[in-house]
Image (tube, rainbow, N blue to C red; front, top):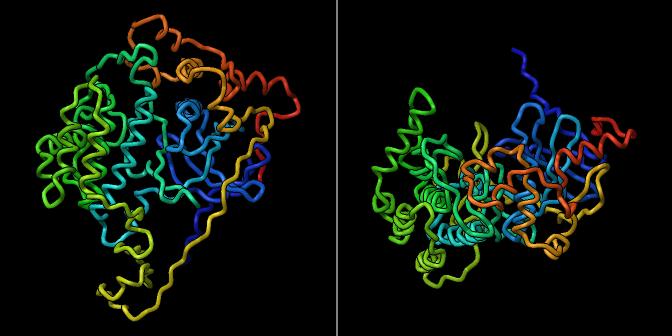
Length: 432
């Protein structure tokens, strides 16, 4: 029997914008694929969206992430289009919490580790919520660690489903609508989101609670449900979540985790969450433990295991003798790949305008709230859903407004600029 040849990703090796050579596919977002790329010995992450087959939401994600730009999100370098793709260029991050969790043994994180993760998650959500944005797809895949000197820091990715939840001027919430389709991931979605209600801050926070219990227990009660269709699955997950009390989920773990989930479930649609209360709960779990290491750092109890028919790779020698593997006598070594530092690249792409430096973005003489209004484009229905006829300011957001600050051009501006320069055709990417 002939061995089947492995499938070769046709994207690997392609060069985009005459700069970025794709190296490896590293993941998928809510509507696009993500690849690592190299340019001038520096590494980047490029997110792609097919302009013909998708909803063209990548530009909107670029707008939101540049608007939110902070220490909690990867740095955004530029947005543009190349051939059949919309392309977002951003800082390359490390592994996601889901990748670390899936490749660890035992498949649980310690209580202290989960509390530390919870603290950072709350800080991130507090920041983006104060900027009038909700994420709507909180899950372990979207929380990633940094690289080099940022390995202790947590970052939030994938703002493809993010949206404004209130007016940036009046702080008035957009109305709650019933009977909506679920936006996000059912396993971690809030009960209200599964029930078809418009999401707000409470839904992001409740999703964090389910993520933390997933790390504590290794599996949530509603995982592995077998039903006929997606709608029945969502309904069954909602039923089990309603029936499973925070105290039941928290059994065997510090009560603070249960108190967190109970508080989140009790929040009203427009209610302001007490972020300091959440931080206090997780600090109580830590009880003054100031150690900054996670379970997967050196000299910790967690062991990373990769199994196959022929081998098992085991990390962390201190715990090796406690494991009952048949091939216990084999020798294994830690393999830590040193990452190269990602440096800023502010060279303009051909026919595309880079965002500029972080300082330029922050110090631009304008308010972030007004800039966000200008960056929006009415092609993106997801951004404007649930908006009511509140004020004239809200209606301005729905209109096509030119980007006066030149950070990320709208798709229409890019296309006009592209047609003016006949030197480059519609497909400027080349095969490496």
